Length: 344
Picture (spheres, rainbow, N blue to C red):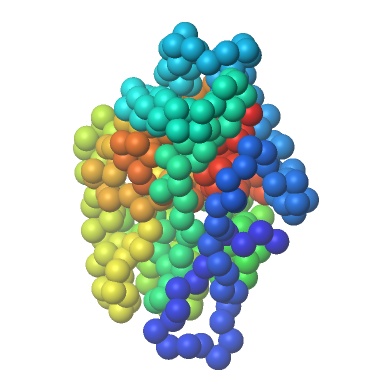
């Protein structure tokens, strides 16, 4: 199975570690095609990713259909990147880099220029590559936030599945007490993944979070995943509730002897929202101090370029990207793979 997180060296080496140590996924060597030697499961995932980003890829690739490199091509490419929601800053960076590389390499054909753009986009996205880390103190407490409809609770279910498959013990916290069906939905995911859950009907979300952290420590869990209520960044009073939850989780960590808690604060983003996704990253990062992103619903959008905007303006690591609703359709982010799927 493809390994997607690694466990930090523990403070005291346990006799039998529960989670297998693994190396973060490294970027592929520079090339213009997905590695055909990739494991079958990964290759299938890359096929689905390319299909999901097909609309964006078609819009950008059409620019390179000619036979010569001229100013009109660069202007059309700039328009295509903006239409793909790459954003002004990232688009300007990519175009300037592409002009320089075309001159340095003496590129003569649009196909050569396209290969250079894949390299340039890979370099821009590279800072977003990062592996999810567990430890050194356990449990690793992960708060998960996002706006309503982004796929937050479903992503928690998928992440739980991946963690459990890697040998980690997981405790879920149903702290989304505002949405009537949220607790029931998370309970279904807990049963499906055979993990424990802490929940209170109509309880205070901060109290549920506190109890979950303490329970995770007492039960010697590797991971505590806290499902928070969906928030719009414009709902200031609700964003304040999220800040309160984080403060309470910090107190629970202190009471449980954890140096830092939560260790991870993840934001789930709907890949179809384009530049609005960047606005969400800014708002939630300012409020909570994000450590990572999960990008969902990359299955038909023409706005896949927003990751370039995020990389240029607010480079919060992208731990996972998702295509589809199946448990296995949540994978680690790799800059070159994504650049190839977006441009080829």
